[in-house]
Image (tube, rainbow, N blue to C red; front, side):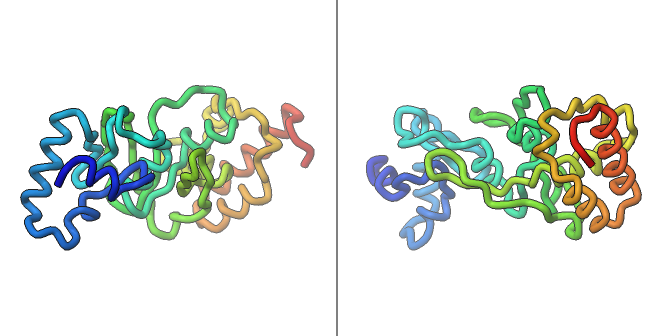
Length: 211
């Protein structure tokens, strides 16, 4: 296969799996060797086993980090600080894309950035949406309230008032406190129920929102 053939096959897809090329291939090992040569030659970037994106000169459009995170691990959605920063709820710049998954926790450091996956139980794998991104891309991302609860859930003593205050939540009008309480109650976690009530109280104290 020539590289021009690969470009034609993947079309506008910003990221692709080697399975796309292996399906019906006469010699799967030959395809794998060719992919390896293209990576070494700087034409492809390998994100993880079987997952690739074209290198910059051959890329038709940029790959959004949230899309890459979704593709790197199935059964995952972007959450925690990454989602909170995306919604403008915390002031810090977040260089790492953090997701939650029902699979094992993993970290991938790639030429396209670092991606962290944290494990949650299946009954807590909820509260996310399919979000439209630039360049006709999309990704599964936690709702603002669920991103906050995921952070609390995965942080030791995350329900501590001092920790919640240190998050420096801004634009609190973007938080639906009813939804926050709903997901906290749905989890059955005393820690999250406490955190939801404490966050509501903190926002009330500083007169961010009307309760």
